Length: 390
Image 1 (cartoon, rainbow, N blue to C red):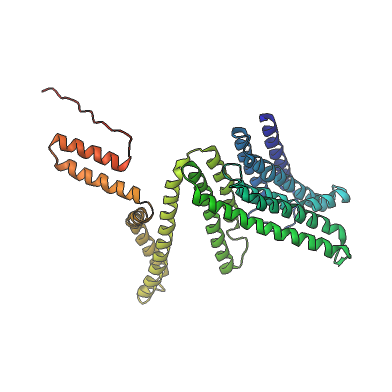
Image 2: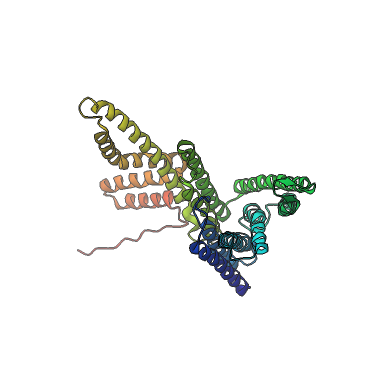
């Protein structure tokens, strides 16, 4: 089994490397604009193959590792290689027309099983590798049917169309594809609902595992919204697309951490820091923009425009506000969302204050035990005192 996993990962990496070689050897159409950055698909294939192989080696009975390895690794790497083989051959004339057409045809439909296996079935099975309950068998069957029907419809459509003039068979293939796409979309919604219901019912380790994926999903949504905002303002679809693409790689990384349970309990700290620094960034950005606008108006009569001084003054003001605002935001987040940590911090501060004034050893020992039980909640605690000889 281990040899199969390692062989699959190596094949995926070799295919991605072949695509990267064709990409680097060029030439490529200068007007071609890919989502993210050129070669992102090869990077994604390598990440999915590596994470999937690690999970499959550690937990061979968990199908999530195999889904990531085959769907996100091997198939994605095959699509990456065939695409740049077709583009490179079409420009240089190095390949036969039939092979180039076949490569273009393959990359046109292979994305459907890739997205279905990695996107839908991973969510349905995460993190245990089993469905949440027997009633989720129907959504799983719908997802499988949607993937198969959409793949058939989209894959056979080019065979029924001749350029702009479609033959009578093309509407049939389109109807098949849209039927499969409808099933696909419905099962995708069901997969998201499955994760949400799992999270509500989970406890202990499984809840921590789901938090990792939830954090990655929140990161993807946040970066996607920022990307949409940048495109709406600038009109340039390439601005920020690399960050959006890289954000998607946090999902397989989070899945790997969750299933392999590497530093699993750090998720609460990561969520805490993410919330704090997100709020801090918004507050400081608003303060910076407001300070620039105000200082420009105040300095306009004294200097020519006052733009440089306004920017410099605003930057210094925001730098001075960073630590005080961060502490205030951290305390607010802890008080609202992490009450146990907030209470523990208050307990330690109260104990430190008492420690400075307390002189009775028995009272101090009782206070120490009380503080330890309130903060770290040990099953038992004892205090050892060292006798100092005079």
